[in-house]
Image (cartoon, rainbow, N blue to C red):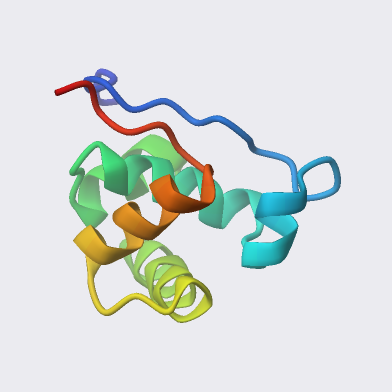
Length: 91
């Protein structure tokens, strides 16, 4: 398992208790993948960390892009920060 990376931590992880997560429509697993995206991990690294296949990671990423209306990883992370789903990296 890869060591945690710098500066971004999840703020919320449960859909049931979190209005922002509910509005975004992200599942708990999609949120876990999104947090890994904020750490600039590759699909293979995410798969290893979450004990899922690379194809499953890619599927979650596709769903995240669709739900956040993002075209790429950077835009998805930016929108997640704006929604308060993750904290931004310190400057």
